[in-house]
Length: 235
Length: 123
Image 1: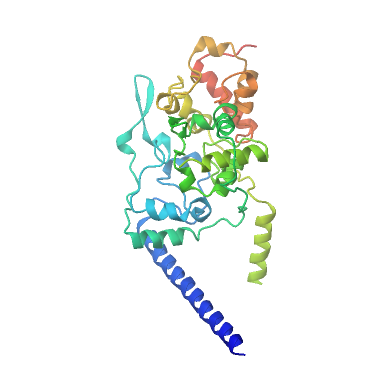
Image 2 (image 1 turned 180 degrees about the vertical axis):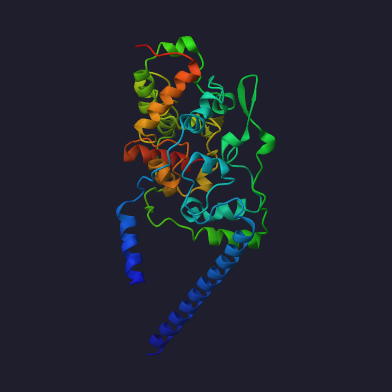
């Protein structure tokens, strides 16, 4: 009898703690939403849809965040928001940051600015909690297990020889920096991106962004998984 | 009723995961800027930023090279845009665009390439 009461009390206590944590998390997310609406929406789109035409893509100042909770890893967001660094070497849209000298296009590096957020730790946590609520319900979770073993050499061959990914994305392979610059730098993608989102993005880039310059390429589920594992191993 | 509508919308979303979103019609020049300039350059000479900063293993084709471009028929150009370099014994760094661009957009790009090279294709 006594032990039953004890179990019941413990259950009530744990439930209360759980509800308290949820309430605290919700409060933090609300605080984060207020910060985002005050500081971030002049550059970021947090409600969708993505631009439907090239003119809209050219006007976009920063990546869309209306599916940030599906795309990013929370721990990375918390850290990055305190000290942002550019992720796309040629800016969010490369055409806005080009100069041509002697017939060669170059990145106009003075025009590529990092996100000016530089939040305090408490603000970064709140903003991350809010961004993680912006999820796309159609994206399947649990597709990619980042700990699954794979052949790095085979994956890099797929990434750079059988498919054109390396033409636009920079990666590390055998301690060498390799690849193009018009797409996001993937050298820290394993910390930054949700592996399931990487898989979904490869599957259909235009679903996320109708006028992204990343082409949709048909491939087997196994190849898509291998690419997602390779990208997620970049740290 | 509102909840029922939301549930139906949710089911529809789950039933067609990651379906295509139709994009707006664009001019050939805008399409070229968006998809081709990153490698082939703003001047079409093969000196895009992925080449000048990334150093591609195979140099992108110079679309302003009249002699070289005139050796290719319109069908050759259509094929390489649609199927990519790998399917046409060219560089695998040229992606296939058949699932990204419509047939009409690819045709428009072929016509634009003829403007850039100031040439006609092999018949």
